[in-house]
Image (cartoon, rainbow, N blue to C red; front, side, top):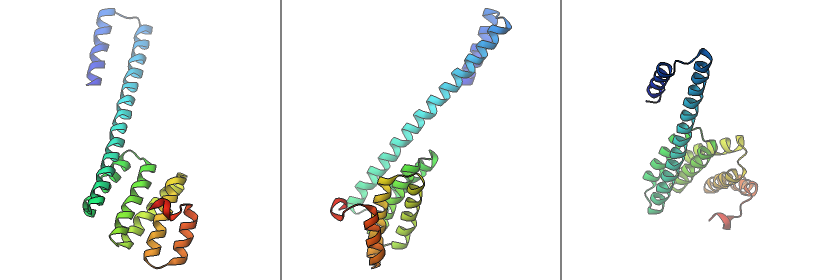
Amino acid sequence: KLCTLSNKLLYLSIKQLEMSQIRYSIFVIFMFVFIQLSSQERIEGDNALLKNSIEVKIKNSELDFNKGDYQSSISNLNNALEIARQIDSKEELGKINCKIASVFYKLKELDSADVYISRAIDIQSNIDDQINLAISRFTNGLIYLERQQYVQAVDLFTNSGIRSEEHT
C-alpha cells in the first residue's frame, strides 16, 4: 500500500507541478527517505508488539506452572522462545531457556533441563548478562544438587552470587 501511495503521489506531483529535473530529484529522494522511515517505524512497532507477546507468554507460563500444568507452561515458553528468535532478542532467549530448564528441573527431567540451562548460560555469557547469568548458574546448581553432584552444585551456587534464601 505504501509503494502504491508513493507511486501515485509521484505521478500526480510530476503531472501537476511539471517539475524541473532538480526538483524532481529532490522529490524522489524525499519520497525514498519517507518510505524508509515509515518502514522502520513499522518494524520497530512490530518488535514492540512481539516483545509484549513474549511477556504475555511468559506470564501465562508462570500461571500454568503455579497450577501444576507443566506441559502447558513449557508450551507457552516454547512459543515465547520462537518469538524471541524471530526478533533476535538474545536477552529474552537466555531468560526463556533458563525458565524452560526450571520447568524440566521441577519435572525431574534433568537431561532436558541440562540442555536448556546450557543454552541459557552460553547466551548470557556471550552478551554479558550478569544478572540473568547468575540466576541460570543457580538453576544449574539445583540440577547438580538433584543429581547429588554436590561439589559442582556448591561451585555453581558460589559463582552465582545468589544466596539460597533470595531465590526461593
